[in-house]
Image (cartoon, rainbow, N blue to C red; front, side, top):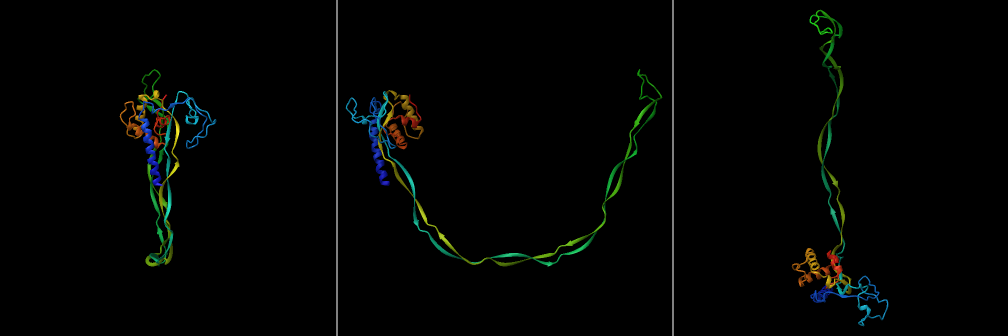
Length: 311
């Protein structure tokens, strides 16, 4: 399969070289396709192979068969036959390198140390007397209640309506209540007798026990596989008609856009001078081969893949 891929690659490079030779005359007619004015009613399958024309025996004014002209052509547009490189894909295939097998393994017994708690003294009970508990509290009590009465005032807190000083006046005055803080002792908890349980006493002893008895184990050894990569042909190489850029539309601005787009995609190009050099054509061919576009012509499909629009 590798040899077949190498042969196909060599054929592709030879074809690309032939296409580049025709494309070197970028502005001399070799690069641009012929303008189609007469197209047969043809269809193409998935790989671009044309079906038979709808009407046999029709010829153009030069006497060429209609099947040799681009299908569905539009007047004023240019077309050219381009080489579509073969398409490959790499697939992975698993191959068994060692068959599955079985082994018997004897696993010895396993032991472990354990600790156990042993009671050395039983629990018991005893009576315990608890005295009463008290606490001291402070509280405020009323000594004299609030009252209202007449009071003789020498210097008036009361006055007449004309603001004249009045002496020996009786005024009705409210005397606030009087309080004082006292300290008392209150019982919080009465004396009592309670039963106290004295817990049992234990000791920790250590001994060895069987954790897992001896046994046999069957081990299955899985088969071993290896992934082998191989390349297979998905679609054969072919030649088909492509809609290409006419000479009058191949402006210096368009050529510079192609150069910049190729450089941005990581291909080696010459400086932008409005002309596609052999280095530029090599980069363009590599781009077309990678994207499986028609090789050797500046087609509109190539411009679309590069993100370039040409009116």
